[in-house]
Length: 181
Image (cartoon, rainbow, N blue to C red):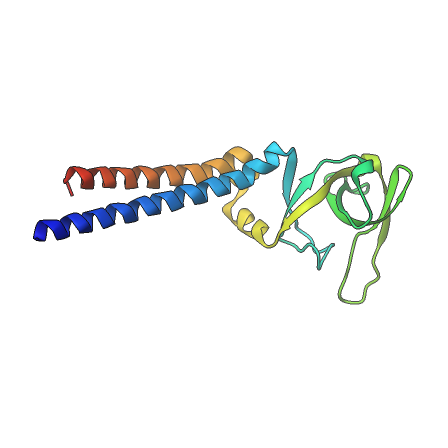
């Protein structure tokens, strides 16, 4: 009878370990897929560092940007553009009108009573269109450091710990099955 209880305990333990591995692999695949999808869709992600587009997009949000032609941009889209005054900076604006090869948009929506600033930019200054927004995830990525700003870095941050945990769990299951534990 004691052998039967041990066998049931071992079987439940193995099942619990397999469930843990399945969850770990599933979560790892989702995270990797989350960062591979932009690459496959020819998109880029960017961490927003200003509140110029609040309340729609706030500092620390992660946005997925798609490179588009002017013909793909519509009124109410949010676009990333090269700042003509500071070549190393980019800005976001909400499109309110299209005029030939230019778009007119608002850069700021301030809750403190400031007027919205209107800008006109040419199609050559447009870097992309916002496809999706993930609130606050940019803070997490910035906290991890510069390595996450490359696809390889993101994959390694997920793959190495997941691989180590998977290896540990598999060796533990194998030793249980062999009766070594």
